[in-house]
Image (tube, rainbow, N blue to C red):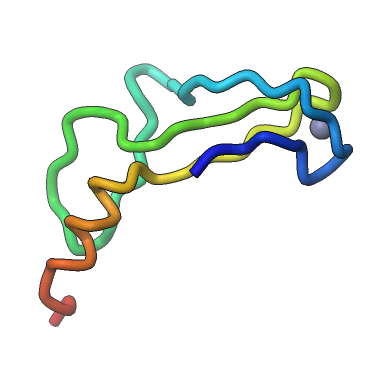
Length: 70
Ligand SMILES: [Zn+2]
């Protein structure tokens, strides 16, 4: 999944990237304990600055296969 059009201003001037803090910012499910690499893709609108993020499909599939949290 990717952002091709800004959902805030309608621009198609979109830049793909990642969000970082001290290291990579990653979505972490409560079902998982350790994530070493970023598992999110970020898309920034170069016109209004809005950033949208998506969790990678591989990680979403891993989450689906985990048992429910007790
Ligand atoms: Zn925008």
